[in-house]
Length: 193
Ligand code: AMP
Image 1: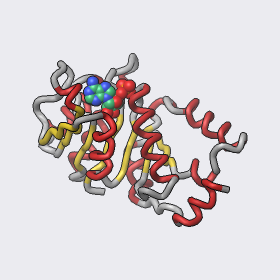
Image 2: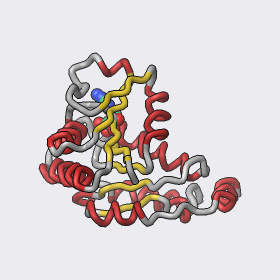
Image 3: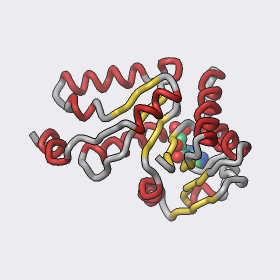
């Protein structure tokens, strides 16, 4: 994986443990020459991971819709900032740049982005690893909800398993490197059956 999209909060959260893991992930990217592609903000978890990588002279590409660019929140010191016309164009642009996706703790925006990536994989439109860094068990309830979707017949177990979950940065990225997407015909079978 040369470039990975990281979706994460525009807020920092109340517990330092989340910020510390954003720093850990940033240091891992810089050390292993993985470029960060992200929402382009300088605030919250987004700002922390971008600043960490820039400080270590790594690559940070922001992809921001014009609408947000002129607010106080856009980062001004990253490798490259790509400005898109709309939020949806931003998603397409990000997906063209990256080899995988990671979500760190965040809110609506983070969930929207990571579930879009999962949906693209479920439909076989993309075959890229999608992971969540489950710092402090932050996503445990969400994972339980996915189990409910499986038991109630709205999500195939095999599609649920596309989501890679780990509480450790090293383990998460190792699993992402080893990820093999299911055969597309099987995926479509499971979606329509
Ligand atoms: P949230 O999880 O609701 O805080 O939203 C964070 C996610 O949505 C990030 O991964 C960004 O891509 C996007 N996002 C939300 N707010 C902003 C912002 N002010 N500037 C840039 N991207 C943002």
